[in-house]
Length: 241
Image (cartoon, one colour):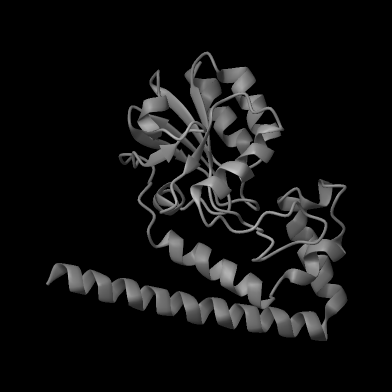
């Protein structure tokens, strides 16, 4: 009886998420029509938190009007539903999910923990992450997991962005990750499986930071891009030096 009850509970949670997200999008879209200038200021303020305003490639017209669109709705639903599968909590065992190396070998997260501490990034800003690697590689192992796309060209797309479609095969994901490699990350980059197990079990979409120690989660960052704060991991690693 436990499994059917759990399944019914998950369906109910998904239905509630659907209602909440749909209502939020309808209200947001209505406000954009009625109060375009006020909503533009609000969205730009959110952009400051996500570093979007710092990107010279993007003007507000490239990304702001996409908020509360149908593709936005679908993406937010996917993110919220995946959070229902979250298994990574501070103080509890970290999911040892499978990942795939650039050579196609299937490994597990703990295989990359040579020492006692490991900082895990499920996609995100490689430049900011590189600073952590430079400063703390003597006490921690670092790993970047390339997960599913946040702004795929056939999904919630931004104008003037790199054109990458949703990954339909591991080869698609591997090709997309090669673009990240051009930023010269200073730690290994691996791929999430096509079952998106790391993305789901770490509630990582669109980006997130974790710090693991002795197989447990000791830091769980907020969901990016709004709450992506590498300085929080820096503060913890400073204490571990």
